[in-house]
Image (tube, rainbow, N blue to C red):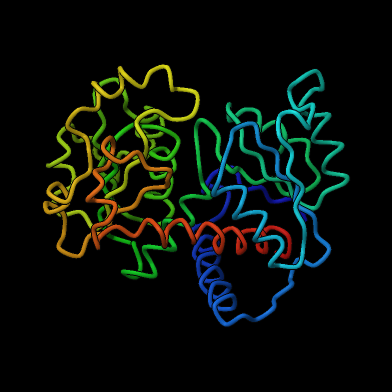
Length: 301
């Protein structure tokens, strides 16, 4: 059987994604019940980080430990990835020593090339273009609070970044409608929008975009590597902050999510982070459970 990778949400079928979410809920309950479940005993995950992280590292490392396996953390100082040694050579070597590899990097082409030469599953833990693991956690969180997201309306407000691109893929795989409100010059991938034009709507006004929405999502205005643009982005994104008042235009039972870290007073108000409609802490925790389910799916089929 050929090796399965998880570089975007499109690498699993809609049914497979739902199965991962169902399994994530089961694994979460097993942990709640303090039941030992070592399905990945003696398996080793290699974690390659070229971008810093809190939630990604902790969730993958803790997840492998809870499943009976282990994880090796590799920072840019610890590897030759793209630094003298060709990516394909690193992939050939590491995939002979590890059972699965997780990569958090910049250009999506890096992880794609690594996967092309890897003998073991490769997981995208964030690139400049996509962040599919976060979407698994988001979709699990919505299911736990409101049931299936199929047929619902989701609104993304802010930068058309890797998270926004992954929400476009999620709209396709989980069958929901997606409104995107981004300032001029910050729209998501044009080709991706075109491919999903039947379910993606670009709406300039955030108030109009959230009207009737079941879920509202945002992210920081300046992502890693864009810090020098912070002042300009603060100006360009004026009016795009998520507040309780803006959320009042959504459905009465709408939810708010943020992949974190959140910059209170910028993309989200401090009051919105404490609003009962915000499920960001459940969302953050579910990175652990969703990724455990993903690891099982890729390693145990």
